[in-house]
View 1 (cartoon, rainbow, N blue to C red):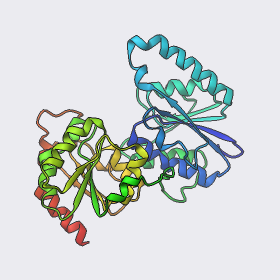
View 2: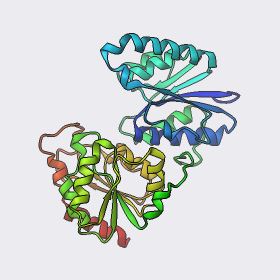
View 3: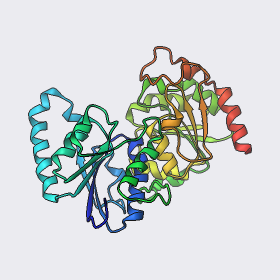
Length: 332
């Protein structure tokens, strides 16, 4: 499909981990068709992953969170109309919807592209806006699903890489060395490991630690810092996305629940220790070899529930269990 095509529109607004996964698609397209210009629609807050990216010609930022509010419907319709006009001016021959939700499906239709490609299994009836579909099992790892889309476009998968934009190491990072990064929480409440468990693990391991996250994670990160006997430093809410990339790249390894920043760490070529309870590492685990995946021993895992009243499966992953696994992992 991409032979003799000058430009391609990719719709993948969010979230952090999903965008990182789709960078493998981006890499494959540019490896096979280096002259093609790629434009990308991304949600506000994630644009730093794509701006000044050597493989992306143009980044189109949408504020999708404001579109969710009923009181913003008139403004949303106006913005969609403006977006449609701007997209149609580009005269895209092909648009690929990697998101597969109602909102992204509507944007796909508004683009006016001749070929509108998406997944047959896309949710929220978004597939009705496509005129060509790709069938791919939802049980397949997300990275491999996106590469199935690349194959349909005519790509041969030569390598699986997650190219990131160039970042400059911030001056303050020079003050840190030989550290392990802790990601203390995930967007789903049910994925979270107990802060006290992180503290216990930190005090067992022979490293210094940096705790990262958004402003929403500040209280958890400060708790970990205050109870870790000077071994942990919180930078939650204090880094930009590109600074976080630099911080991850310099780390020894990363300890994390199933969250988007875990996938960013993998893209930074870091090994991760990942803790899985309600979700499946086969679908969304750290991609590639050499990572340490620790799964809950409970039979109800994975349940794919976003909320759990007692976090039972994550509590079953004890600090001692993680410590023992890391020690064996390190010896290998």
